Picture 1 (cartoon, one colour):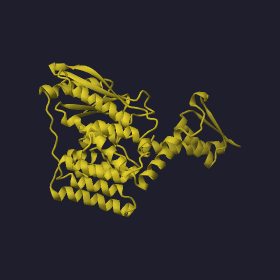
Picture 2: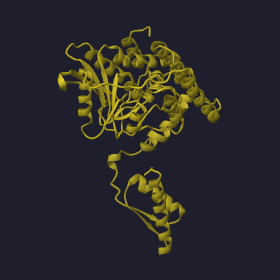
Picture 3: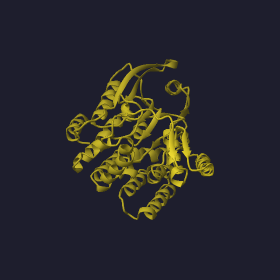
Amino acid sequence: MTEPLDDLLDSAAAVIAGDELVTRALSRDVPLPLGAGTMALLTLDNGRDHTLPNTFGPGGLRSLNTAIDAALGRDDVQTIGITGKPFVLAVGADLTAVTRITGRDQAKMVAQIGHGVMRKLRDGGKPSFCFINGAALGGGLELALHCDYRTVLDSVSAIAMPEVFLGLVPGWGGAYLLPNLVGAEHAATVIVANAMNQNTMLNGRSAFALGIADRMYGGADFLGRSLRWAAEILVGEASLDRPEPDRSSEVWDGAVARARAAVEARIHGAAPAPYRALDLIAAARTADRDTAFAAEDEALADLIISPQLRSGVYAFDLVQKRARRPVGAPDRSLARPVNKVGIAGAGLMATQLALLLLRRLEVPVVLTDLDEERVERGVAAVSGEIDGLLARGRL
């Protein structure tokens, strides 16, 4: 990175102009137990509830950068902690802002800024902790990986790197940090296989089992227990035993080759993102961090301006964001509460509609038809579908 980070942030703010729901890194001093000193605890919060999760646009990255610099510059702060607002740590880059990028140099700048801000957590000279209390996707998970230590709430349901799903790669350190933490095979699963499998998510328990987090806690006292463990680490009362991933060429390259064969069998070279991600994972075995981050910069610069990314973001926006908040729809505050739904008919289409309403609205549904026999068949059909969903763990 040749330009100073502040200059890059100024350039990004000018290039990616538009409305941004800025995620603030709100800092507060937390006296740690056991005489471990003071932690500057940074809470990521965009001022909205969990339905509008934290993202990182130029303003969010600037706030995070300023908060980290302030903590590193204080002699009375011994360590830095990061957590999120209720239910959400962060879900990565602001994709709306990314789609405003028009040139490769602008795209590369986005990658460099993410690396420049987040790597301070490892390079700043003070131990850093991330307390994953909610959804951690893409850049949110990469932020956690840049920290020296991590805890996770057992009830978190969304931990993933969905970049390949959209046509990108983890470009803020994830393609290097994750394989060097959990090994090539697990990294290929999280970064490529899960993303291509309808964006499959890890939960808190599976992330802990995989080695992404060092400790897992549950309950309302998650943060308190995490802070206690951080203090134990700092004063030497707790130790950390992370298994070193197998870096032998046979194991590492073999895992990448198997993942590449699976990708080839599925898409036959139709999209570049999974192949670029696997190239980065393969190189992570021997590359130093600076070289690996530079390779991520180049990959992200190529992919951000690709037609696959534009199409991926458009499709994601259409079926996710617009499905919940259609353009031109009346404000939700105008809606009257729905306490019960009645359906005229109990045939195939009526029972499918009844099941959909039960799952989405979670209110009683009444079926009517010409006679009792038809109604009983309809109710039995819906009940059978519900039993099947319960058995498969989907309800």
